[in-house]
Length: 360
Image (cartoon, rainbow, N blue to C red; front, side, top):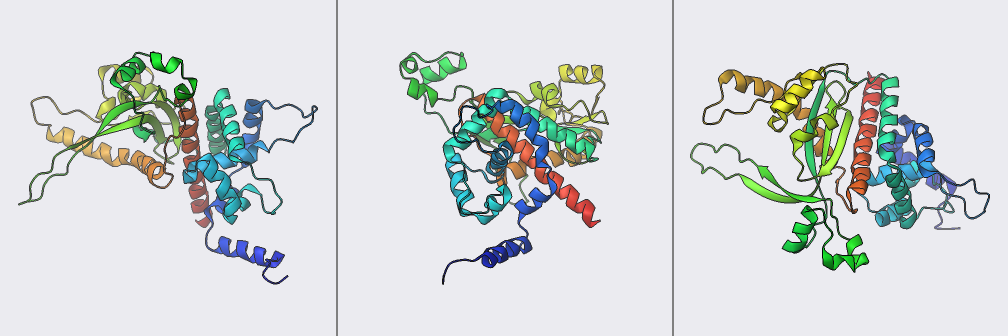
């Protein structure tokens, strides 16, 4: 029929997408998705179907939808629409025919909720980390630790409600309003992010430092210096102190004992813990109070900054390209969201390494 796309038209369309460098096709070609099946099946604990009903979607397909959401910052409704609308998404998921069932937003939400309740994201992350080791990407060269704030929707609460939340209590007026309570994030916190002004050029006025209030969570991560993969991570509220999360973010399997981090992580407690656990601290030195920093310390910090900057590249990709943002309620769901973002970053990093090795 005139105007109706035929088989060869669709085939040519996919060929042109491949020629244009479809990143999802590259991801599909390199990532062994079946390594995630066992932990997914264990977390979901689905029935054998003996009672009848519509068969569930393949867990690996659903997991790949969560990867799409992490890579492109998609809500559940947006994911449902984009899967139906974009040929690259359909090919990535293996949904090539018009008659293929596409999971709706509710199904996507339930799948992610089941993973959250099972605490499965950490296991999925660890499973891919084992694959990286088997593929030759051992955690090497020491590790770089840092944290970044992941924003969440601001909560318009009264001062009394904020005081109750900080005290770990449920405000009285919320107790009789379960619908309102479900929409209130009592785990996220406010913090102030400082932006230091650059030194003024000759003849120009000096700008002031900026303090930016931010509401949400923190992604504490450690990357290996050799390959740049995220190897350890933890999630807290945005108000949590970075230095207190050092031991929770570190990866114990790195072949080198050196640890790099900024001054927030330098304390007697952390230095003692690192030494007692076989690590070598190369953490930034703090400026002495009331005295200028020595030239030797300044040079040493400059050397550390060149190494430590690599972790900033990870967070920059998550925030700019992946648009990492928390839309859910509660720290358990935030951990699933941030954990998937960390895993998705490692997937794309793995593709980059594999293609670079192949071209060499």
